[in-house]
Length: 146
Image (cartoon, rainbow, N blue to C red; front, side):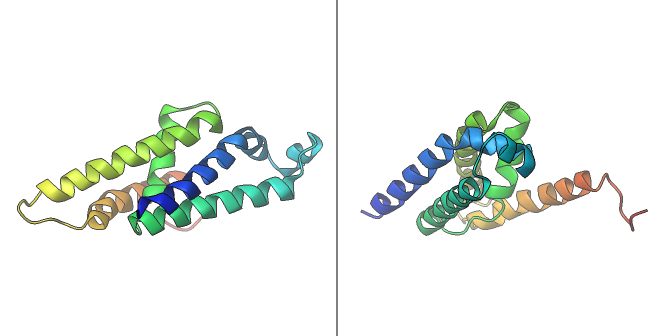
């Protein structure tokens, strides 16, 4: 079946990421701090990047390119899950599934009996949210920096 190969890669990537979630927390403190705590920063970062590539590749091969999911959902999940990546990673996965399901529902019912492509609905929500994140990061400034 089509689902068989994708779920294996997703399971391996998810398990690897969950196993290294505490290392990811330590890496967020900075490379110097992680090294001072005895972490092999290059090896952990390589494994995490490999895991992220595996997860992204498997998800895209199965569901297609759904832009903005990886940008929107973790930020929203961070709002609900304040403590650590061990909880944030599964919360992001669950919230991502809920978000895509809701967008799919909207795409099928908004102009029924016609369907809008799922990616259009996700982009319609994702672009303003992404602009909001950029503006928030810049402190709401619209012009040149002082």
